[in-house]
Amino acid sequence: MGGPQPLWLLILPSPPPQGITRSSIRSLYASTISQVLIKAAVISSSFSTTTILDIAIPYAGSSGLEPFQYSDLQNLLGTVYSLICMLCAENSIDVQFGNDVDVRVLLFKTTNNGVVEDDSSVGSIVNLRRLACCGRPWQRVCSMDDENSEIILQIFLKLHNEALDSSNENIVVERFVSETSFSGLANTTLPAADDGAPRRHHNAVAVGGTFDHLHVGHKLLLSMTALVLDSYVPEETRKGRTLTIGITGDKLLQNKQFSEQLQGWDQRQAAVETFLLAFLVVNAPLQRFTSTEKEESEGKRPRTVLNNLPSELAIEYVEIFDAFGPTITNEAISALVLSGETRAGGTSVNEKRAEKNWPALDIFEVDVLDSATTDAARSNQASHGFQDKLSSTEIRRRLAKRSGTAN
Image (cartoon, rainbow, N blue to C red; front, side, top):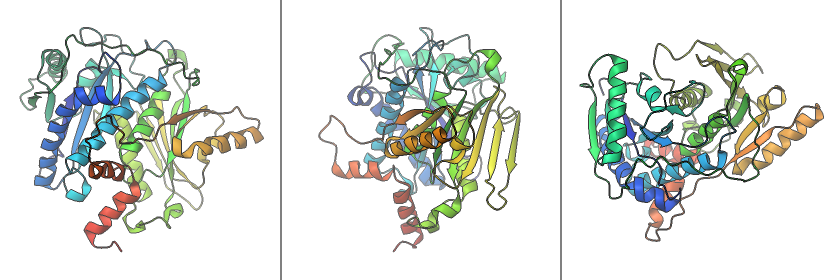
């Protein structure tokens, strides 16, 4: 395909005012997301490429002056990603069909007029102005065809136009009729959840994984890692804010199933970096980094890539050779994000830190996505397809089948 990779933006209205549940999210968002996914998949198939679809959702949670609402944000992102995964399964959108769509869910802050004027550009939840002015080269901007969505869309287009000092003639704007909508701008402030989760601020947060063929489960894990660091940080202490992403080294993966389809460390690191920068809305090509550094592996010395962002946030991608990585070599790390499947890993890390008389890490757990739904009519085939999209092994199997190397 000639020209740039297809890059679309879908701006959705705020979550349902009655609360975030699988049924309420599906009722409000499913029709529109499904229509956009199907259209994007046609482009992917027609031009033998992968269409990138950014889905931006307004969020009006805490003020930013107190520790953020972890459970609420995980519920919102997890429910939306589950819906996206199910819709892709229902509509046969996937790498195995050659019509894959790379979906990324972004969050932006909103007030009753759709814009938050004060934005410190530190956190992972930006305002609509920063989203519109970030320099990301969307070719198509989509929205629901209702009064509330139109308000947000017009503000976005106006801000985007002002930032580029030109018209939006090069952007295709498309509105999709939804089966469900609600009145009012629905600037929903979610209630704080008293779930016993840690409530201190963190300047250094870590996560680890293989991140092979990045899928929605990885995206949720990485998003929540960025959001743990999103707590209010006084300006004088912003320096030293670090996200540490441990990525399993190639040698540890040699015995994986369908290993011939495994992505190398450099490719997996690049995919994680691309996703994180999109989620953090750091997209202007000339303003992406203050600096970036890369150190190649020498023997047992891990490969590392370091992004120093203008917001004084550093993202360090480190090759790991065991289950611990930098969590037992860097005392400054104070929080670890992991999936429910690797809960025991957090305990092991804290035992190792205790041996060094280091403070224990706060552990933030990300729930495993599933296809459970209140609609009993969902087919078993779609449910199976949902689970397939959450498995790197299954993705490798399908790629091996397409290439003729599967047993």
